[in-house]
Image 1 (spheres, rainbow, N blue to C red):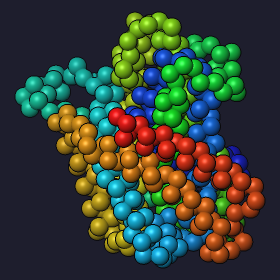
Image 2 (spheres, rainbow, N blue to C red):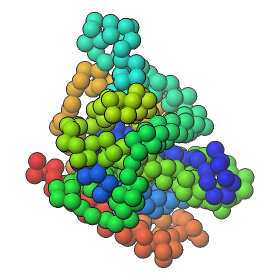
Image 3 (cartoon, rainbow, N blue to C red):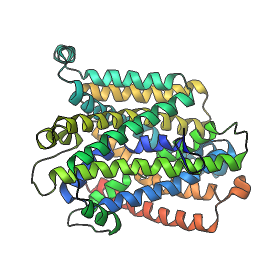
Image 4 (cartoon, helix red, strand yellow):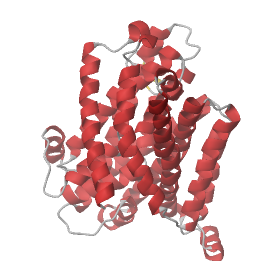
Length: 414
């Protein structure tokens, strides 16, 4: 979907934006704004830039080789110990991890749906009769319907629509809450870390720069541009335009959520635990429209992640293990079903989530380094990284090492 030919475009990178703007990001941005005002907006800007750098490389790898990141890693990493260690990490962090997080994706979407339509008598009757969450089942079914046909164009268009819905919902909510533009711009360009905000900075960056998005973007780019009539160079131009459009749009959504929370809560000492509280609490402050818009955004965020997380896991597993189409479908279907069960029953598999967080903490710098090695290898020919790209990639790698080290320390210290 093109906006201005040659510069702006919505394509596979929209899947990445849809993936990182999930309930976790919305909750983290809400808490950051409520607790620290606009002081941490710069962390979102940094995470967007880092994501653009890595995702451009992943998309280029997919387009030039015609294969996803998993397939390329299987070819590049031949040393048995390294190869099987990498496989274990990918399966633990991406497949098991996304299964654990899927319950949160569906629960987040359910909270948005409940804020919009929770008072319907049919919904109330189902909940009272079964004790289950009816929205979880419906959202799971919708995610399955989008992915079942295996039509890339349908998946892309569905996620473009969800990202645009999130954009309108969260941006309009921000406008209604009338943010302090001067403080917003200051927080954007002047990095600062208020007392006690270090963990929130790590969370803001860590929910945006995630390893499974690299698998998702490389595979989806390879699939979209596999029959590009104008050749690789033209495909890369379109892909770069896509990255320039989609990733900043996702970042803008995060900034809008943070700004809304800052406008409504910072300095008020009112309690807030997440985006659902923010959606409900906006009504007496800014009217019913703000509540509906925030809830619609939360629904779109949860649904988009409920689609992209299983898809990314399936791409990763298919790539590294050379699975067929039936196993590919079985992977994402199983992850959705696990998420529906976890959300419907109100479960929180703490041990599995902890395990996934540890695996992700290890995997992020490993995959970043692997990606850098791949885009500097001979398989890319003339499309290998240049000096500027390698410098930027090395800086992002250093940041992922810091993030991962801190995340692992927190996981084991806790």
